Amino acid sequence: MIHDVAIVGGGIAGAGLAAAIVGAARVLLLEAEAQPGYHSTGRSAAFWSETYGGPGIQPLTSASGPALRDGGFLAPLGSLHVGRAADAAQVDAFVDSFAGTAVALERVDPHQRVPGLRPDWTLGVMEASCAYIDVAALHAAYLAAFRRAGGVIATDAALIAAQRKAGVWTIDTPAGTFRARLLVNAAGAWADAVAGRVGAAPLGIQPYRRTMVQLRTEPSAPAGMPLVADIAGRFYFKPEAGRLWLSPHDETPVGPHDVAPEEVDVAQAIDRLESVVDWRAVAVERRWAGLRSFAPDRLPVYGFDARVPGLFWCAGQGGFGIQTAPAGAAVAASLLLGTPLAAPYAGIDVDRYAARRFLPG
Image (cartoon, rainbow, N blue to C red; front, side):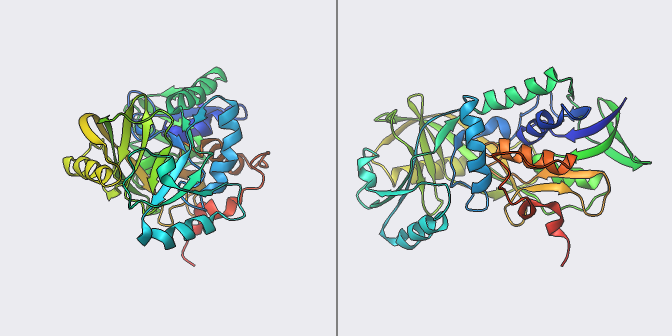
């Protein structure tokens, strides 16, 4: 069989796009691991925040909100951005950067929202729309919809090499050889490596390690507490079923691999937490790390490669690929199929995310 589209990567980017186009094309999803979503998608911090990723990502996040809420994938959380007196300029810049957008921000006294907050944390900005996101359910829903519509998934099928001849890609994998007219690079941290294997130039998509820790604290994290994020980007934490999920907001450049947390990052996370609240870390119950992959301008990449015919990019989603999944899939599907963007995505400036922006000049 010659498929219309072969998508390399079964994480949230590839699965979302596959579900979006399967009704209009014969689609093959190639996953390198034994199950889709093993790497970044399965290791998410699991929250949806309209400010996360900055103003360049906010249109995709805000546009994704209705689909995520209607699908039952969001639950109330809220986010409190905190700072000390020395961070006042950053707080002002943060609020100003979202002025005139769909994001509602309110300056608050952070001590009224977080019990045990240390006295020097005097600045607070509340983002009430922030929500928990059920990552596993969202990813599973995309894969289920894809399968129901006749999509084909091949696992343990890492792309070894691919060549295009007479308008058809021949794709070699450990699971066999496949053929497709269009090839989509949705390989996440492996996106530049996959580009090299198919004869395309890399775009400079760099993976970074991000550490997460699940803590038991004394006192326990209050169930109604919002996600708490440092305005200067040094930590964030949120309550999770009576425990605390904590990150030192690290971004360590690494190569694409099955990443694991480093002890120094775990220790740094706990040290930063204890500088914010007077709680005691009783036990580290879990620790994990994931890869966040950014293009040089930290915006996602959607669109056909400027030099290699038949190659399409759906990569560089950083740490916001899940919260922007519905809009990202819609944008990528529109560009891939040449169809108009439907509401609520029609207002998105697609050109700012185009792959061709990396061409010299």
